[in-house]
Image (cartoon, rainbow, N blue to C red; front, side):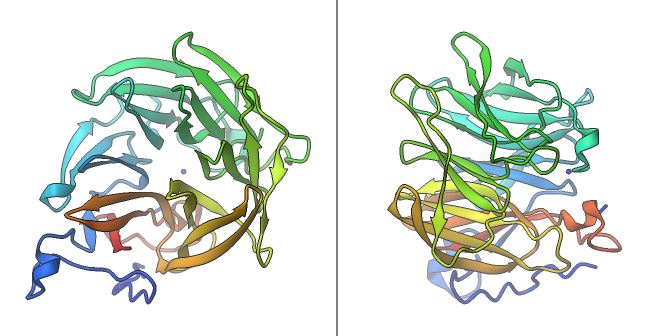
Length: 327
């Protein structure tokens, strides 16, 4: 995934209230701050495990650990990469194995001609040590990652070949689980992707797709999802929450803080309605949900990727931040 800070300064969002720590608000005193500093590297994805969150860095391949019970106090979980895989993308906890899965890529500028194979690394959740690694196929730029009930790992390829790859950690077998002739080749591949509702929902070509999981584990035919009002779906981070999907619309190709968080509710597996949860975010990428002290929160990485792709001029305001939005 270079870097005038129009950083949604007050984030006056009418739909999700932002609540900060401190002040005279007794309820806020035990809550998260409205913004958690995560250093000077571009935050890509965020994953929650209990009261801890993990944030991947596109800039150096590191992963931060945030102690949400202590207001998001940050520490290094995985240090900066010591090899060429210096861009950390999607994150997913595989609780049955005690792993944090991380998609690791060589730096990628979204030019399909520059796509190079990434990899998936499993880190021990207790120590941060590397447990296993799987190399992705040629030109496969891993983006989003999720797991199913059997612990199989799914990776969306954002490179020139739109496909969903699957890794069986028991056998280390890697296959192309899903692709479709209707998915245009040679451009922007699979964006956001999430497991839920009996299959995988994935964003590609400005719309949402559903790929059902057959009983034998194979992919059913991809089905386009009809979204009420037929909006363009440009999803980055996606989370399956309470039977629906929360997702970030990353505005990296639009100047200013124009990003949004949406909620998708299902009337059928392929018919949905969409509502706005939050607006005026600066290039939101990864999102996650967490409950702390009985309060529900949505955590959003403001990636400010517009600087990296030339949409913005100058330099971004530092440090980068994760926004904490009350639900």
